[in-house]
Image (cartoon, rainbow, N blue to C red; front, side, top):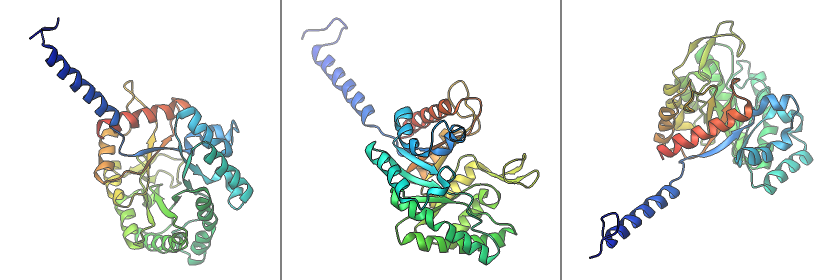
Length: 311
């Protein structure tokens, strides 16, 4: 039997080549267990500076970042929820460029856990237009908040009522109502899981955010003062994942290896995978050391690298 210059027979070399090729093909076929989307808030500075507008967002996400799934923030088209011409143009730009509208993050419409029943009902109705807009655009959900002032038990009861009523409206058009841990009681994973159980509707779920776990701030306001009490982010995400209809991959800073300094993405994505989740994980960069564009790219690279390691 003839031997090659590396000391192996021709048949052994053929076997090695076949094994290498098979390994390469396996690597190519390996995919992320989730889909990557881009949360519009990652570009809020540029949007507020009017460097581009909401209509440009889907094409920008695809052309600049290679992301074809987008998550809107309602404040960037606040007066357009019922504007059929505007929504049709936004949908056309998505359709023409192969971009999927995933969800609309809704703020500024009142408190769904307001202890005042009339105010709570008004908030529920304020969200109807966003449910309708989400349906038109092809989204699967709208993200809402479970804010309210009172004891944990009082706000929980009010949240269950408000979310139940909004979910009843949304389920008629197959739209999900999802709650993010967004400060206060909602950043307590156990509390929010309890609210979800209380609502008990298939179209009502959570949007676990890797970073929003401040449950009490120094001056009592929602965002502007230092956090003095923070819920364990890994425990919180794990408690919310059974109800998750989306995930928000929050980042601020990165080390030299490209890892997020405030969240262990390997640990967090393993929690997400263990829950059987295979939906959208939205990039939400909120840092200041990197530009918004650089931060989005760094977060995408991190998700892809860690996601492939645990795929």
